[in-house]
Image (cartoon, rainbow, N blue to C red; front, side, top):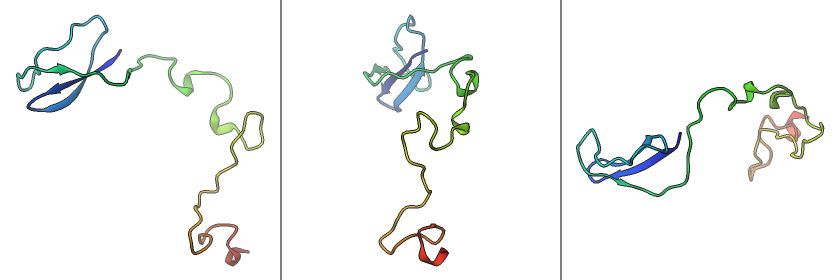
Length: 97
C-alpha cells in the first residue's frame, strides 16, 4: 500500500498508509485542522510473504565468500586509515607483525 505525506498547519508533516482508491484526507484527526496532500518520492509498505531474503531459496548473502562468482567488491577490513597510520587492530600496523 502506498504511503502518502500530508502537511498540517498545526502539527507539521505526517505520513498515512492508504489504499490507492481511498480519497485524500481533508482533516487531521488529532487536531481537526485542514490538511494538504504533499507530492513526495514514492514509498510503499510491503506486506505478506515474498519480500524478504528469507522467503527465497538459494544462497543467502551471508554464505557468499570473497572470490565467488558475482563478487565484485573487495573484502572490507573494518578499519579506516587515519593520518597517524594504521589502527591498533589493523594487520598492516607494524606493531602487529
